[in-house]
Amino acid sequence: MTSRLPTGSQTVGPFFHDCLLREDARRNILAPPGVAGQRIRIEGCILDGDGAPVPDAMVEIWQANSYGRYNHPVDSRDLPLDPQFSGFGRSATDEEGAFWFETIKPGPVPFDKQRNQAPHICVAVFGRGLLNHLYTRIYFADDPATADDPVLALVPAERRATLLARPTEVDGSLVYRFDIILQGSAETVFFDYQELEQLR
Amino acid sequence: MEVTMAITIGDIVRGDRAVFPPYLYDAYRSTIRRAPRRPLIEVPLTLSELTGPGPAISAVTPEDADLTRNAGTGGEAIGQRIIVTGRVLDQHGAPVPNVLIEIWQANAAGRYIHKRDQWPGPLDPNFLGIGRCLTDAQGVYRFLTIRPGAYPWKNHPNAWRPSHIHFSLLGPSWHTRLVTQMYFADDPLLPLDPIFNALPTEDARRRLVASYAHDVSEPEWALGWRWDIVLDGAAATPFEDQQETQP
Image (cartoon, rainbow over the protein chains, first blue to last red):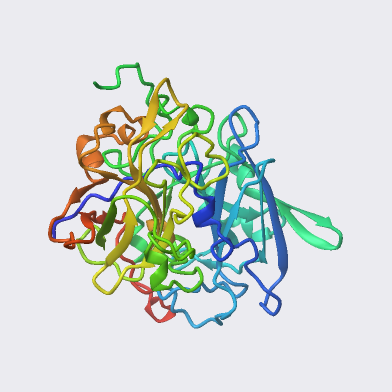
């Protein structure tokens, strides 16, 4: 079959909130009570190349459940699904550039036939001035598996820290801090995805 | 008249350089302090990206696809009534069903209801400018709306965005996520718009432009516009424990 070129990307612009973040479309809370797993809160800010907060961005996340199972037909492994947990989150940034999610820590998921990936959360960043969205990932700084993650291993060692969420305890809750720096010396690592034929 | 200013175009691009715009395109001034300057790190697609949220938002109703009436006021939006329809396809041309499409747009006067849009274009109390639908088994989507007006922005002197509708697509996987804009083929502002012209090739730009479709127009009712969308990334095959036999 002939291959078609994909439709190109355009910025989300400044006026998306009434649509993409209406009450039944925003998803700050991924895990209502009863979802299995370690409850965590993720907090961060998006900063531009001047270190100024980005107040009109949107962050989406996608993650496996605590058993490492994705709620998606492509993942048909024999692991428990949690019907209350879709794994998708969507947060605006506020005037301080801040976003947040309440979720559970995901389990490990496979990389290839031999290796697992460390627990991680996929992140996409949208905003005025971003002609394409940006893909990155949240890893957990305090998880021993992070050191052996095969995707993180492809990131230059001196930049890996930009993908590590740092745990803190706030009022007895576990909060992971993950800032997203769009530009500059501490710029967050962003990804471009390639097909990996070995997976098939 | 073409855009004649000198334009700095960054070399950092996600995906196919013939398709996707660069992050830095300084004629669109907001890119200057927001575009990453370090190379993207190439990593393989894994199960994490070959899965994705799909239509994970709350239930979509047929009323959500009628922007002329979904303000819920009982009144109808002012403007040229249009039907915007097309198919969502993968790169092999196969239809992609069950894609959640969320759209937002200015009203016929070029004004958004958004609180940050404060230019003196009139608001329309019967128009929210937001809609959503799911693609059907043939990958077809369809909205009834009004043609959006052009609106001014402060990117450069006398800057006007061409008429456009914002599209957000949650498709089959994380990797196929797409946010883009649909334009109208007869719009004289297209050659002047830095956002549209950030797309790298004439062909890539053409694929964001809807065509007038007389077969879609309905007599005594609405004009038809057709726009097909092709999602990046191949369709994924199921990932099962049982397939994990050693080669």
